[in-house]
Image (cartoon, rainbow, N blue to C red; front, side, top):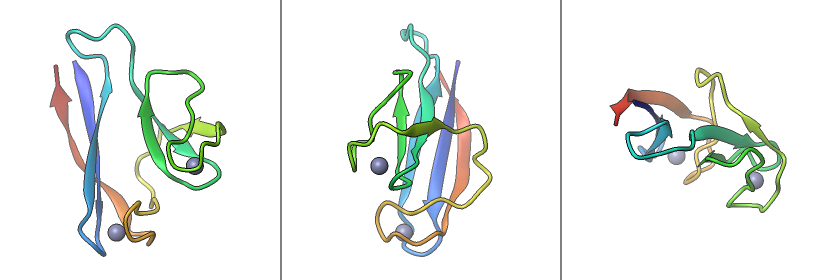
Length: 88
Ligand SMILES: [Zn+2]
Ligand SMILES: [Zn+2]
């Protein structure tokens, strides 16, 4: 069973959910990463993923979702963890 982690921007209402963990047909675990360089979020099954925004490979694995992130749409720091659930 996988985990759904979603973020909502309180400023522009942009939202995005990531399907993490292991699904029924998946053999690799998907984890959420944050780019050290541009703060973009990325879900990946790779151990050293590349940022899809700035192509940097210095991404850190996220364990703490309870902090403010940068909204990918309006760039404000009001992008917060607000959606959670399960998938399989
Ligand atoms: Zn980046
Ligand atoms: Zn926003």
